[in-house]
Image (cartoon, rainbow, N blue to C red):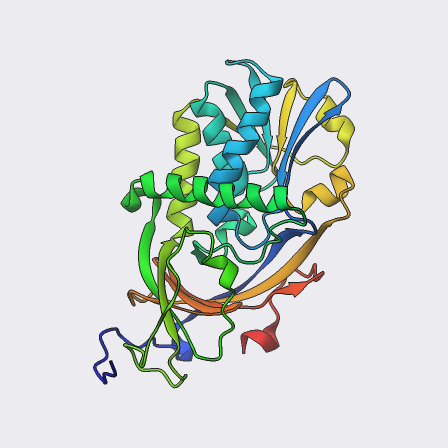
Amino acid sequence: MKTSIHRYPTPNLSDDQFLRAVCGLRPCRHGGLRLDREQLGSKSIIHNYGHGGCGVTISFGTADLAANLVDQAAQNGDSVAVLGAGVVGLTTARELLNRGYRVTIYADKSVHETTSSLAGALWLPVGIDFGDTPAKIQRMLEVLKQSQAVFCSLDSQRYGIEKIPIYEPEQSATEAHLFENGTIDPPTPIDSFPFQCQAKPGRMFQTQFIHNNRFLSALQEDALALGGEICQRKFTTQDQLIGLNEQVLVNCMALGSRALFGDKQVYAARGVLVHMKPQDLGYGIHDGFKYMFPRNDALILGGCFHEYDWDDQPDQAMVD
C-alpha cells in the first residue's frame, strides 16, 4: 500500500559528516571454502579460509567444521595454534576453547586492524563461491544454518547484533540463492520507501546487522576469558610453522594462505568504503555491492567488489 509517511529518518550525507575512507581486501577463493586437513612434517594443519565477502556471516559455521577436524587430530586438553586474528580466527579459537583445547592465536595484526573490522557486516552470504560440486554446496548450506543458529543464541546487546529491515531499489539484482537456503525470508515487494529516497522502490527483507567493533571485541574477550592467549607474530615460511610448539595448527590466514601455502585459488576482491558520523537510522540500503549500513560507530557507505585488485588503499576518485 502506497504511503507518503516517512517512518525513518533520511540519512545526512553532507561533507561535514565525513570521517574517513577505508579499503579492505576480501579473501576470496575459486571453488569456495577450503576446510580440510593436511600434514606439514609432524604437524597437522587444518585449513579454514576462503570466506570471501561473508566471513562474519559464516564464521561460526566454519569454526564448527574446523573444530571437528581438530578433534580427529588432537585430544581434549591439547594445545592448538590458530593462525590469524580476524573473525574466522576468533570464532575458531572460541569454539576450540569451548571444546576444552588450550589455544594460542598467532597474528601479525591486532583484532581491530584486520579486514574483518572495516566493513558493515550484514548477515547475508554474498561475495563467496558456494562451491563447484553438490557436496560443497551442501556443506555451505549446513555452514549457513549452523552459523545462524549461533548468532541467534548470542546476547545481541553484548555482541552488537541487531535485526533491521534492508531496502533494495527496483533496479537491484536479487540473487535468489541467498534466500532459497531457508536462513533469510525472501524479500517483500514494496510500493514506496519509508524514508526520503529518489530511487524507485523495490523490495525489503530483514536480517541481522553486526556492529563489527563490538562483535570482534566480544569475541576477543570470550577467547581470553576461556584461557586463550594472543601472540603477535608474522609467518613468512612454513619452517616457522614447523618450529611452533603446538602439533595441531588451524590456518585462518585468509589471503595470507596464497603465499604461505601456495594456494593460487585465493584472490583479493577490493572494497572501498566511506565512514560517516554515526546516525541512528534503524534500517539499511542494499544494492549489490553498493550499500548503506548504520553501524554504531559510523554510517558505512559502500562499496565495490574489484576482483584481483590487491591495492589496499582507498581510491579518492571513488570516495568523492
